[in-house]
Length: 169
Image 1 (tube, rainbow, N blue to C red):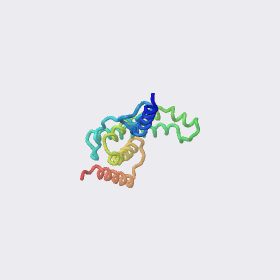
Image 2 (cartoon, rainbow, N blue to C red):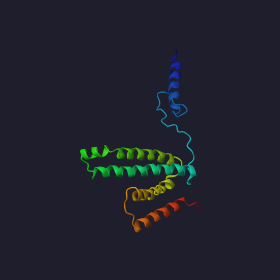
Image 3 (cartoon, rainbow, N blue to C red):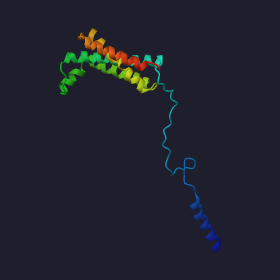
Image 4 (tube, rainbow, N blue to C red):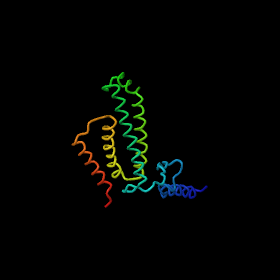
């Protein structure tokens, strides 16, 4: 091989490295950094308005959570004041009402996930206030807790706020 050929080969090698484009997504090889994008499924469009179907799922979430809270209250009332001492917590967790309450709260959370996957959180979250109204009713009728006039006015204010969130401009 002549000196010219060797020089030309060397020049070609240097030229090839000097003019090679940087690797990108189209030209990446196994030695390059892998593409770490996470494939996503097509999501149903979120809407600011509450559809009847989503409202129904929301009501199921609220009711499951409310019944769960009432069961937790009934269960801990059987134990007495809860402290963070292990024997008190174990006694509370041995009450079927407490276990059922946690299960219902978890079930309500699953329905809540379905709600927030279909509508805007800024619309759905304020509607959870319906739960405050239901808890007050459960507390009055099931737990025999007193209901004062000021509490009724507060419930009325909550209902008014929920109505404003649901109002379509």
